[in-house]
Image (spheres, rainbow, N blue to C red):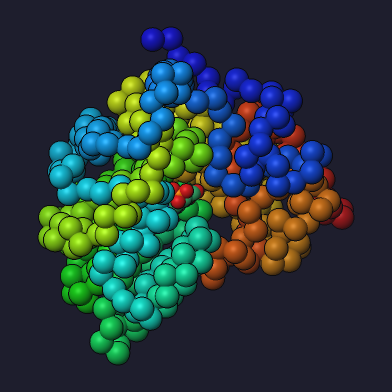
Length: 386
Ligand SMILES: Cc1ncc(COP(=O)(O)O)c(C=O)c1O
């Protein structure tokens, strides 16, 4: 099949017609490079399946296990992981709901949940909304897991005998770090030593071109849960559905999941995600190629227009975690980039400890928009006086 360019198909005019949050939150003179939506059309097989469902009136409630089975086949083909047993899965409306439900299976009100800031901001809000207590195990300066900090957090969190849960993000949002199997084995060993239950968010997993290691594929993770979805990879957040996966020993916990949780995902969401996993890999290959080009373009643009920004590019997501501490724009550079540069980014401080002076930039857009955005950002920062 000839390759296509998912990230080269839309113009700014097309995109401005969109009604989702990315394109409507800010006025029209702002270039939106914030929330994790991609500026792509939907993969053709998904369009066909959705069109067929809608035109034939197949718009009722979901049934069956096709989504988990498609995910298991995708995991085997793409990651060489044969161990995803679709009988140990359940469905939730979306990944964050699945995470909260998994946490609910292994802990109670007020119990601690360890997270690794800087991290996807809703981790804080959802954990608090679930009535749990957040415990920070900050990442290292390199944006990777700091295993000593993690161990210290496990000890601190468990000091008064409460059950401890660890919410891991694999790959990590915002640093785009893909955890290695050694790192994940070390996490599993620590979790076992301190009797910590691990819930891992793998929503960006299918996007990783190579080297993604599903947490449950690592030895010693049998009592953990993973929650994932095709939504991020195929840009289907508006078609809600997610899969919760239990390790072998967590299956008995998953069996206690209230039946009503399965009412969350929509039939069209399940259908779209299933088709994406089964038939959307050529489109995904093309997307990954475009993202790789955009990642390289971003590095070149930063060199030229914002040479004092530091960025450790990771392969895990289409999100770039930019260290702007040397720009003199204070703790929240996103405010200056928005007000003066008319570019919307995610403010670093919302990602928790380690977020000050940073912004998160979504480069899943066209090269033209990316170029214009970085040029605008460059103009916000005054050139050094000679
Ligand atoms: C790490 C991570 N988890 C969860 C989500 C949200 O997923 P959902 O809409 O399925 O809850 C996102 C969205 O960008 C994300 O980056």
